[in-house]
Image (tube, rainbow, N blue to C red; front, side):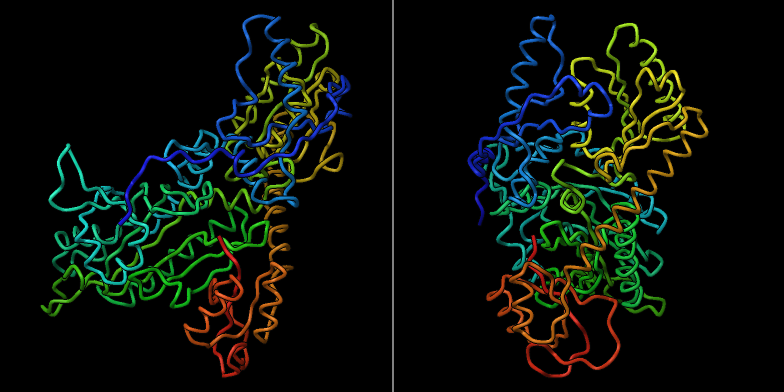
Length: 557
């Protein structure tokens, strides 16, 4: 039994002691475009609740000067931890500085900030369309589930019992029956399906809900593993096992396409081992993504539940022959964990690097002027460019604040992962052109001068570049993944690959006990049996016996 307690999660300072670092104050030359890509450091994640760097300007010039002086000193002291130095500290620094999330007051919870939630909304927007295209309807189930429901399916209660948050008091009185705060909804869904499904005419029943879930995790990591998280969970009921299997495969395909086409993450799709199968499922299908530290992230799952839950809840229907049958079911889900996956797949030492299709801001415009008489012309041109791109459906932001230098803005929006930056100065206004920089190509190589402001030319160029960036991120992640998967034919080779931090791929037909041994001795688990299997005879890397499939082993989140 887990007792729900309000304990404050330690600040990041207590988890990671940031070393003192220094940097020179940005020179005045940052106002000039040729030198403006020099990096100005941002606040490290001493704690998520650090004040936003883009705070409101003070009321007086004197206050402004004092504030800038303090900000400059603080920026000299701390920077984002390099990825190669400490991947976890880098990850937390990026979340804090990019203003994606903050810690909640209860240990293990997080507050998703607007920029982070906008990424989740982009995920929702895509998946909602796909769910409805495949015949599913959105609805909502209660967050509180009677404890007796959880106990009805034996493997389900065994699998989730350590993670349950249980309510025992309501309205100041002890409850007659304990209530579980939703860890997942298979049990309450079946309770309702029993009331709604009576005949084969009621099938298939295809629903989805967007909801929050509570699982009492002992080791938490923002977005990846938290006490409470957001997700969608689909639940379907069918008349035959073939229909249920087709549905489970269809939905893992939806997730796979989303990962590749929207998130630019090259997942490996396959079937989970018996040990890794969802509690209460017959089969679990998964998409596994390789993060920047080469650990695996289970990014989405689809479960064929068979009749396990329908038998536990006696969810039956009358078939066409007048016979009572138990329904066949599926469930499938992705969560805010995907946001963490995007950060860890594409990010670099400068911060986030967002795929254009999911970026809350696809283009940021930074106007540049030195003299007061240049300001109006530059801002008018920048506003015109913003309107042109906005009208063309591009998610664009004009950063016209005058409390920060152009160099500071460059690095701030780089850190936020904005795919394209447009710079407009007096010379650009005179020539009717702009300068465009790509987030995924650092330095001068990613900067192009003299792109015409003429609407059709500018819109076409920007959209082409957004497509190029999307494809480039996928290609880079695919190359990284493939170069870090090692084919092995023995247990010694598997252990060597895992010790090097890589994924091991090899034939497997060994027992559940052997799988547990691998986990105990290497820390790696079977991530999946990939759908794409090599032809020919295979020999199990552990037992030397014939094997029908290869499996992928890796350490994971």
